[in-house]
Image (cartoon, rainbow, N blue to C red):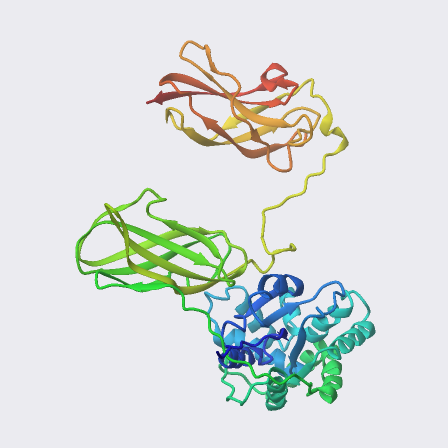
Length: 522
């Protein structure tokens, strides 16, 4: 009985943007199958090996190294280089010609300013893309990137010497030959262009000032490239068994004559920032009446893991009676996803008395990419709202006297029972001590509810923190109070006030709260 042999080696093809790596990865996938070669991956070296190494033989993508971690000895490494000025030009014009304003709202204007000013006007976030990109990448395999220029260049060259195969963009055929020998591929297929820059000038066609600026930004890379050219094309000795392609099963897809899904797309395009409200729009063509239908969306990340899914049953919006004809459906999501590439799939299921039946199901119908704002500063892959509070020594002080006032903005004269409302207020600290929002005795905003006779209905109202800076002595600041209305209807008085936790309510130590008549209705 013959045995099907997939490629059993371990290869990391680590390539930088605009060096031709995507075309090589596409070629490898055609030769070995998508069960052996990863889709494009982007991330930290060890994390990617942990995530993808067990599933794929060949890891391809933009891989970053940190803290002199070196190579994984279980893997063989290959990489591609490109003349630095040519690579930088390709990246600049790729942004200009392969994207539109909606996709690169911040990046496009910055690239235009850089080119129009011959490199004089350079936004800080362009620096990693245009300045010594290769040295900054390779030097971190054996160093941490904080060394001086000479040491970083030496570390980068020493790291390149550890790659099994190093190629250059201008000698792509030689690089492909070396990879064929490494992988024991029986023949060579033509290399197809992938993610190629649509239109760009040659490096000898740009203004001299712009070229000089790019050479200045890539002084270390130019030295690295000249040294690497001499050693590019190292060949390796391998065993004899030739690999065979292995292809993963296709994503699940169900099509019936009853319903067809057409025109599935995200209204905002295929590039969005995390936290954006997005709209996935579908067009359903029904050929018969369907009494009860479940509609669902499922979003998968670049590793094929389910990142998010919801359906009309979960949303308590089960569709009753879908009539024949064309129906337009929109899923509106607050897309709080980490940076990654995602696919969205959709399902339409008929709910039957004895079970359910898939009428239309597509695991992958549209793809999109989630990014983060270019000016965000943090580490890790998740962008969280963060702030730092350091309590001054007087934050623990007990307030014996708290003169001041609270004035409310627009307050509804009628509120519904057990509903929450946000009320804008102006707060004045009329004393000689600051009011702090943190510490063991924070100052908080709160409220009481009085009935029509002045009796206390709700005494210990919910707390609302002060604005992040607190309130300095003598200062007036704008804030808000979150209020929940009483459970019983009737005429009430809302008292907006403040307190220092575990110390006192401010109206007992000199503060003037706001008193507001409110009619509470059922």
